[in-house]
Image 1: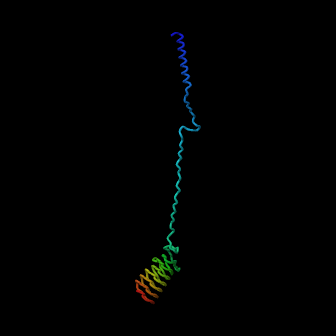
Image 2: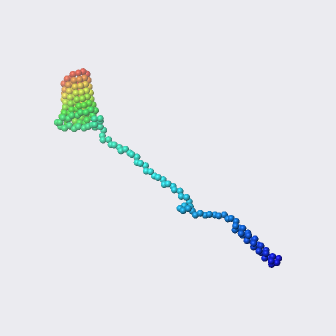
Image 3: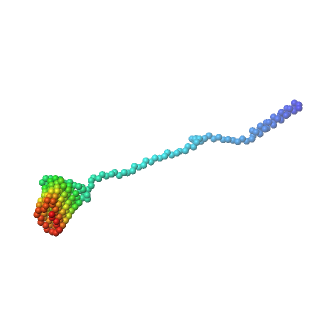
Length: 209
């Protein structure tokens, strides 16, 4: 090949290469758009977890205990009242379904009411006057006894000079002697460990001995 032929071949080759490069530059290329992250956005989403709420329990109401001020009966008196006799002064007791403790030396003791119990086992009684039903008296000593009522019980740890009963079903007992007895009523009983002196009885089914 001569010089002209080589020049022509080189020119043709260069033209072919230029056409190929132009074709490559004209073919469409994919476009990738990269957007910046939005303002204030973080790479990982944030999950807000609410804090557990604590509600304090209301304190329970506890009723306060009430102390008993003392046992009383329906009449407002205590179950066991105490009476002290003053020397030479008369003393009176009245009530219903009540127990009374008597101490001291009683010149005169009057008991009235119903279902009364008198504990005078440490008392010395001059004159004991009872008016009412179901009255019980226990005494250390009784000088004179007068009863107007029914179903009474009277005891003396000593002697009794005089007993006067008006009513039914009353029992009198003395550890010592009873000097005189007068009864008006029914089903009464008088007993004396030291014997009984004079007795006047009106009524039936009375026992004296």
